[in-house]
Amino acid sequence: MSGLEQIAYDNAIRALDKQEKLVEDLRARTGVLLAAASLAVSLLGGRAFADDRPVPLVVAALAALVLAFAGSLLVLMPRAFVFAVAGPPVYERYYGIRDDPAEIHRRIAYQLHRFWERNEALFVPVDRAFRVAVWSLVVEILTLAALASGIF
Image (cartoon, rainbow, N blue to C red):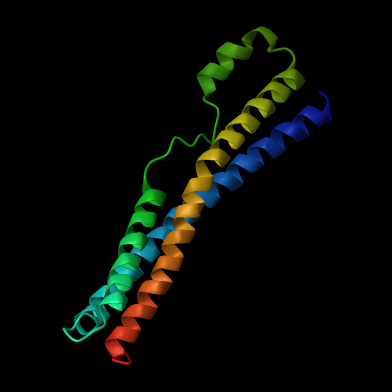
């Protein structure tokens, strides 16, 4: 068997593994982000939303909270990511060329790369939603802290 097909196959698998870990890590960090947004409003909300606070800052804090939650929910929504090739279809599809492992590796490497590209297209809006949620959390905490401290 040629080493090139094996190298392509191994790299395709490694790329999908890295992509899967990235998605898992992002979703785990989103859980922490949700907890932080909830904790911030729980701890600072009582004093921040007192009667004599400036309405624009209160609206900004609430809008940031809503954006942090919405962005987080978009990240956590189920997506149709594909990180592996199912065994039985591989067997059925490549049974006719089972005596040519190099060709099997080559074809599967291309298939795995297509999965990676499709996943990447699904991941772009997830990453964007996470970034919006993070910056919204920053705005939420800063506005709540400013309102609770009474400097406005």
